[in-house]
Image (cartoon, rainbow, N blue to C red; front, side, top):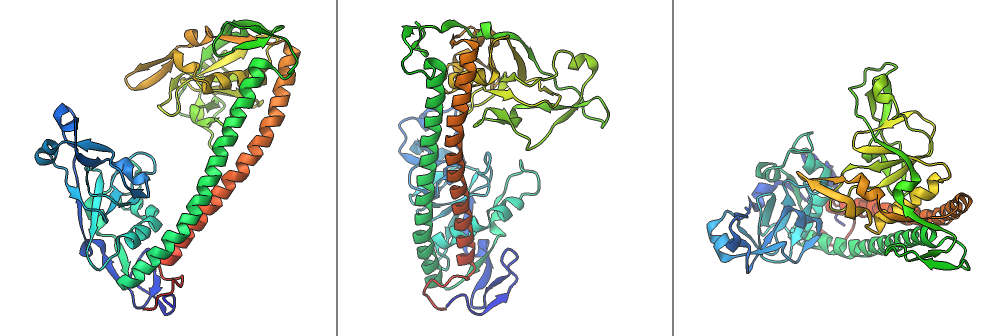
Length: 443
């Protein structure tokens, strides 16, 4: 049993491994190199290509079986990119979000860009075992670049990584075991993530139906002549969104806080809790504000907060949340404080804005400049909405809140299952690659 005879070793990231296992720097076990990116301005390099090429985002796939793009033979011969053979392990040297430090196994021959390190194992290391070892030390690998998250890794960092080296047959047995076990865990995770997607879609459908049809299934309908609304209850009015707003004013950023009485919480887009359309308290941002900066900007319970600038491809600008607390605060300069007219229920109109965002109505009012999305507030407020009587708004909002609470509870359960499964997956990999699990092969 390979877990017997564990001893303390010079392996910094896993001091206790079986005595029969060597510890070797990765540069002694494999060839390590980076690729390159052909000139993007040369159209011929990127047209009618036949050569597979990978960017750093490809490591988000556990096993890479398809290229990011195809490049031409001319791009291969005249550029700095290089071939990595099937059976290599790729590590992202840089990349957005969690990409840096991720490891993927390469299941095709492919060229790669300069932000990927190709690790081509020698005969004494199994590439699947190596990937599991690198994956189990993802945080440690990212730390090699220093504390600044913007700093990238380099080939020297990768080559310096210490790797446990049991006999190759043991490595293969560990990899086979982990392939089987993680496949089951991954299937469980995928099933729960699919459930989360379905529940999220159901939640959106509940809200969209409620704010366009109401909750009385027998209510007579009329044509709204607005595409996204369709038929609406005949006693509702169809008005421009601006008719629901008393005033809207952009927020303020102020100055650095000094710990005095002029400091006030400043709500940023980062504080938006998108699933619930409220704000969260993960982190408070305090800013020093003068009396003139506060004037007309201090938030009140029932205000809506409209994202005016920022956004991105996956999360376009224009999201709206409800400020439902009595804590004095302002919103940042990228957010507008929206005060509703009398007779408008804040919760109901939060749901309306959410439905418009998910149905991509908001996107029609986006403007792009220097890579930043901005919301044309006038154009957005010019969109048509269905307006029920005030009391009906309140009843609809209460019912939607009850129904979405049930869905949210189911989503929370599924997310917890995913989180626990990922923790189990990580623990299983860590235990196996350090010899703490019997995989049926003795050393």
